[in-house]
Length: 181
Image 1: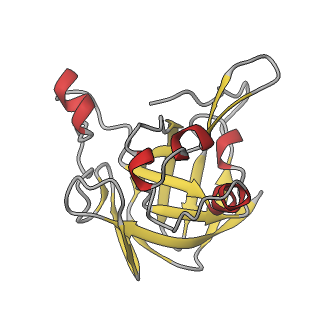
Image 2: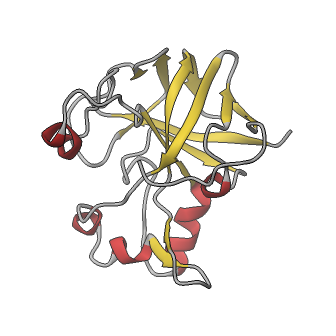
């Protein structure tokens, strides 16, 4: 089993792009982060609500690896935890290469099932010009790589705070590569 840690937690009651850093967040089974605008069984992201408000919410919680911020710093950007809209900033886990349906156990009781990649949007450039391009890349075959984190649903609720251990439980093989959700 691989492990990582929670570097920061954040939420926002309104549909702001960035989220506010908190001492802790509370996950609610099947809904998401208590007090966060994206909490719910049905989709809450405004662009998806406009298309079909009855879609299941596969984006209840957003995680970003802190290693991305270090990479961005090397490209001349200064990005703070919560600024890209994540609820949990992790350290020590290669989030982008986890397979779909991986279970992350965080703290004593919280469990998150990974549903896919976050598709970065042009609002990122409102934080810093050129940031959108910096969170996208291409692999050797020319396929798009989305680096703006992963999305998940809450399987088991509980409290999450800075320093909590994250344990990774991979799904059964064959693994399914993460796609945008």
